[in-house]
Image 1 (cartoon, one colour):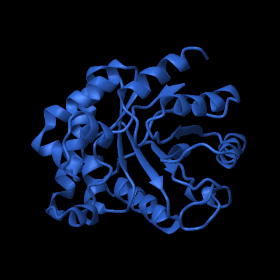
Image 2 (cartoon, rainbow, N blue to C red):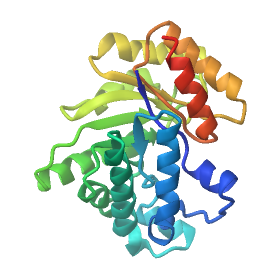
Image 3 (cartoon, rainbow, N blue to C red):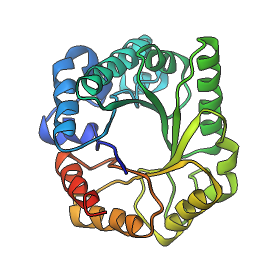
Image 4 (cartoon, rainbow, N blue to C red):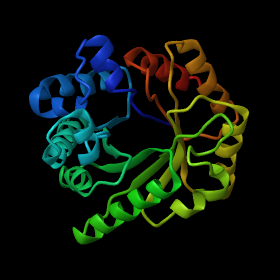
Length: 256
């Protein structure tokens, strides 16, 4: 079982009390803080660290009122910081993004993180566009990086563009994909069914890193339910999770 870390934004806002909406800017302005967060996730047991790169596309930066030309720099620095700490502790670094953006993807790739994750895929067309762009950029750079894909779905297991995930997930499969899963969602019967289908019909690792509204007991209970039926290989936390969630989850995994 592989243990991912938890949220980055939650830690920055709730523990460090920094309210800047553009968390990726901190890769440039407060790199030591980002390093500290990664190290604390290592301390509580995380095997893989997600870089602070998720939301620094040009579009996102523009929406924040930031300089959109910083997309590449923020992604590059976020990936490098993550890889530095991951390598120091013999862990794996993961560069994350969602919406398609060439500068952001190039920054992540040039940072030399171990793995790329397209996560929180909530829209079919945009998700496929992201994957296509990532594939093109890797091939242009003559890079081969393993890729994780993770979807955000509603309680019925549907993408927010309306499609049932079990009907469309095969569109995302290619030779680079090493895992498939769900994040930024809370567990339901329908989502368990989707994960079981992934497990049965693919040879990929199956991941689940849900949100938490502060109820750690429910967070652990939901993942525990998946562990009991042996449908996940990779677990961790998304929005609302912090060091304590991952620390308790690590102890839970030791029972299996």
